[in-house]
Image (cartoon, rainbow, N blue to C red; front, top):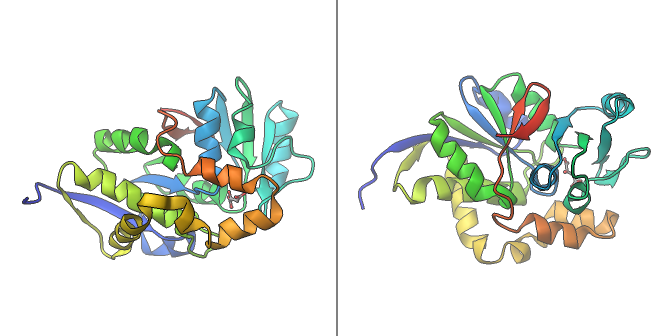
Length: 244
Ligand code: MLT
């Protein structure tokens, strides 16, 4: 089949590589599969009314004084004094509440993007079809930003980026253009792993870290790898993530 179009679609493998990308005029999809963006999708998809992603624990406590549920972690462990941690299953119990959230990598990637991109949206396997449907409608250059771990590459975010690339290019038989091969590499990795994502990710660094530090980590990660559980797309409007 001859490709019908060429889509501006890039993947940035870690926030430390963002200096190589121009975010101006782009829609940035932030992805932190284990677990920040999965929590955001699961929470908002279960009736949480908004999520404020902040960079610091101090900011989160300030929002908490205004009645927000404080959520998140540092180094994978719930912050002391917060109401909930960074498990999507916990976020799903907060129907009708407003959440303020800070995490080691995910909310930092959102904070950086919001000052440079045209639009910031939240991606996870949990909302893959809704997200890619939304991206197709926007008709804007797309950058998938993998949150990684403290500047390092994480496999789960790269596999998700590959799933986005596959979904956006497969149906329309379109090529994508990018100055590097990040998107191509993610597509290839996803092709190899998609038949059993959990098995492919068991040896991954953050999978292992969470198993060491969190009692219910395996249940969380199994859930984070469910595809299309929620038909929602969180978008950043001002300070808050809300449903598109
Ligand atoms: C992060 O933002 O670094 C993660 O979501 C960490 C975690 O899994 O708790």
